[in-house]
Length: 406
Ligand SMILES: Cc1cc2nc3c(=O)[nH]c(=O)nc-3n(C[C@H](O)[C@H](O)[C@H](O)COP(=O)(O)OP(=O)(O)OC[C@H]3O[C@@H](n4cnc5c(N)ncnc54)[C@H](O)[C@@H]3O)c2cc1C
Figure (tube, protein in one colour):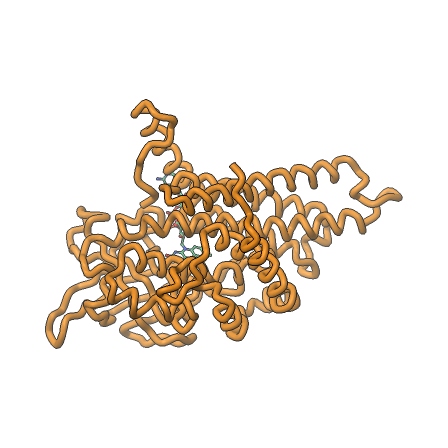
């Protein structure tokens, strides 16, 4: 079940570690404490290192690396700061959408610029009344052929992370006015906008959602009121396909999210191992107390299990197979592991763990989001159970061919 690490993967890990030690470790705590975003020069450096186009084919400006390499990059960046490891998620989602479902013209127009970081992207799927239930999306895209073909967007989106800095939002909107059509009435749009902390009301307005962690990127509530989108920006050029076009993005985004959880948990374990050997109570390092030793051992065991599940899901994807089940296993297990491991790390720090002076509280606050975004744990279990039961019904090994989360 272990994935093979080639020299390329080892080299990828080494270079990302160097980048994190040089560019991220010195700034992460201060910026998190100040609730400040990742500086743009850091984002430009990540773009320059090719992190946003890692898995795109070279003919579209990408590096042509595999999913395992992407997981390693996400893990190591997140070990430095979750927010930094999360920037690339957006470009991976948009790129996968285009590769799997875009027209050739859309791929040529957007992919090389996304891979180079010239265009930054953000995902606007969630709405105030439609989170797990994508079929309930209300944001409307109405075709208007007057003055050239375009659509007018009207409605609200929420939790659009990185919306301010993005040049392109991938927006899932309802093209069929009949809400009973649910998923079948949704279409995906590439919505171009100017980057910056300002929006352009009334057509597009945005406000920041205050959060308890994940401070290096801001998440926004967005309101569209007649925002014009050229018809050629309808992904794949066909209405009603939006939800189905999202499916392949779930696999890669969930593997990437599992890798981010592994990275944050590793950072917490590293800190706990150091602290347990430095902190003395009852005349000896707390690492000499068996309860603490066993905590560390359990944390490391769970962490390694999550890492292997994540690499395994990546390797299944790289072999060209369907990997939604494996991506679901990895995502849900790593998310729950990260919450437990970071909480135990904080516990090992005692009162100091609760103080802003040590980064362990950052790992704990950041890790809480893994059970919520990219499909909640409850929805992941539902997807996994559905596949298992379908497989069992078909007399197979429990790995039936159900649909992904919707
Ligand atoms: C920090 C952060 C960043 C995010 N970034 C983005 C982003 O960039 N773009 C984007 O589009 N979205 C983003 N999201 C939104 C995220 O994807 C949603 O929060 C998530 O899908 C859950 O939707 P919801 O919050 O509406 O919860 P709900 O769907 O309302 O769920 C509430 C609770 O009910 C449970 N539940 C719902 N349905 C079922 C069911 N059928 N069976 C069992 N339990 C169920 C859920 O698991 C959850 O525990 C982000 C969220 C956060 C917190």
